[in-house]
Length: 199
Ligand code: ATP
Image (spheres, rainbow, N blue to C red):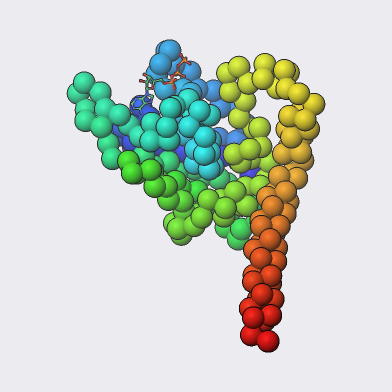
């Protein structure tokens, strides 16, 4: 499995559709200060489901949409597509190539798709969660982040290790199951009350 290509359109400084073809092995992106190198990394995190504006170096989520320049008006939406080579079957999906897409509109709405099929953020997260990549997998180490990891409390450090070990997916499923259990118990209580009233 490797990242095959990344297409950005209306994402941060990439107003026009721009595709980066990646090869297996190491890829280096070089360019002058402010030319958009970090924006490419932001696009990677974003398409994999990043929800924090701060992690994307912005104030609000809509800041990822091209804001316009002197010669070009702002755009109404940002789109990123990430194509992953899955010929080794590392991702739990029956395709040798998987394209994850995310689109965001100025009203804040986000849409996700896997191989052209509209899906939920959860589907993207689950697809990536056993692969070692994904939003909270610490595969993207940003500027200054090493320092943050070195300064982390033991609890925070445990969180990093849990995420790297793939526990996160199960923790999320557990939280979801517990919420369902709570609402079912509330329903049962309500039912008992009704039964008492009827008798
Ligand atoms: P450095 O080498 O200094 O870290 P860099 O190549 O990583 O720089 P980026 O931080 O990726 O550069 O890009 C910064 C540029 O992106 C700035 O010029 C900024 O104005 C532009 N930019 C960020 N968000 C938007 C947006 N929503 N619309 C238009 N331009 C944007």
